[in-house]
Length: 64
Image 1 (cartoon, rainbow, N blue to C red):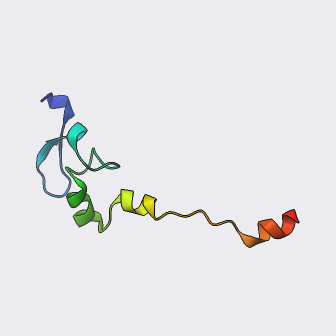
Image 2 (cartoon, rainbow, N blue to C red):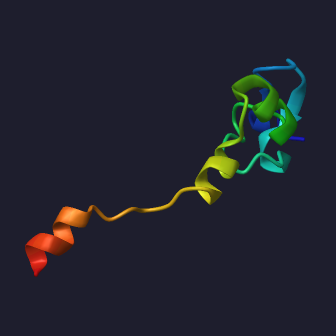
């Protein structure tokens, strides 16, 4: 492993290669999604999958 790609997990302090981290959004902070969830209480990926765009009703009224 190249030493420039080695990071230390914010939660468990384990050394890891950030390119191989299964955490899709916080590869440079956590060694994996389990540490991400344990530290934050959620994963960023889970938040993004539950994100819905809601159009305000007043826009449709003004467009009419």
